[in-house]
Image (cartoon, rainbow, N blue to C red; front, top):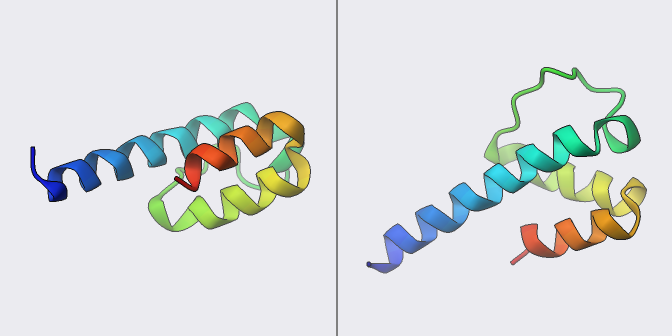
Length: 68
């Protein structure tokens, strides 16, 4: 497996984690957003920011994974 493929797989895992976090923390962190919003790569900084501010300890743990 080459570096490019590894980077692509890491980006896909990160995006999937951000999508799961949006669904799981919707009521706590993202309540003012459309519940049907489709999270894309450009949304990840927004997801991280809201999880840090409103996600509690569990949110911080997910942020740690997203920032790897």
